[in-house]
Image (tube, rainbow over the protein chains, first blue to last red):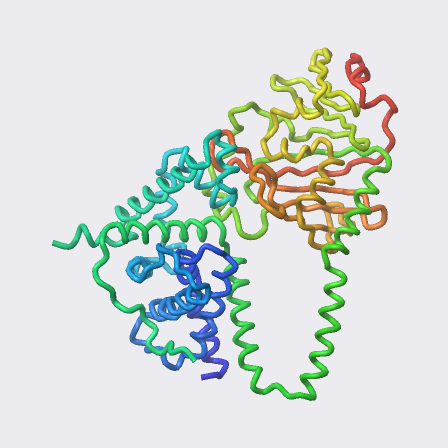
Length: 184
Length: 317
């Protein structure tokens, strides 16, 4: 499995799923450099194990499975695992991403187009915090100074904005219904 | 060797609502990072890097000592050479000569500021939204300072400056700093004087204010202190001449200062020819990005008393 045609096929498949994989890694790991390292490592392992891949199953899920093992190995090497990174949380993340992958659209950005509409629906104060934090990459204390508020208030606003966005994404069916709402 | 053969996440018991909320929040956080910070270029770079790793991993078994040794030695020499040329100390030393050149003589700069639709200085990760999706330009609530700054003229002599720009109700406003006092001359010729060199900058967009861009000398020193310099590389400006081009990135985000700056320098005199950056105004509607461009238009000597307010209060001026 080392000929050029296979490598081209593999590269094309990776390109298709790179953004999804990054989203999965970013959801579990805060440090961007570690995210990039694990992304590279996932690709490398996937290439080496490409013969084991069953084409009948979704490639995205297989890649997430590899990333999942690498994430756990990463936390084992640190000898600490964040509370938010429990198996159940990882499982829900996997479900959400599977659901997003099934959305119409050729690219990841097409599939998550609903996110932009949800951002636009946020109240202006929350939109401002989201922009400063994610787009301008400001620290929370700097945002607090900019919006004349406390750091804790900014963190609350960001938390609130993320919760509202998640609710909106459920409504827009980009996220599947909550288990608690569907179970009897 | 770890077993990645059955690489699927093992099934878990049905999660409760709290777990789902946590996962949702983590995923939204990740999606926002991707939405705002990734673009086609960063994705391409990541994939290329991964492909290079694949290539490297394939080449390892066929590595031969004789060829490997000479290639390795050549690589070490090339890497060392590149390191010496591009090391921060080297770039910092170059930038020191830019600072020294700036202190020689008077300079006249043209300022252009516009709503940021193309974002030329914002290479890379931010500003993912397409220009067609951006709200149309609206000035921030704190006045029309951005539009007034467009086409303004800035005269500089070491830490002294004179800025000539449009007033809020038309006419020309002249602001200046003579080394001790700030002053402002209204369109009808009356002067206001203050002792704080920055007090008259307060109406400008926050990031411009923080960078003290009117005092270009301090700005260049701030760049050396708080920013990482990369380059210099050869670059051309609109005049078609070759310039030395620096990319400058803020070392630690301070919130109110531009994250990235581009600087073009004359290769012979080391005089700064153009500074460009994208700035963000916190007030007003969202997406208040402005591109600020400061371009050298003349290095001719100015009258000795040009930086005092008396010169500019004369009706003839």
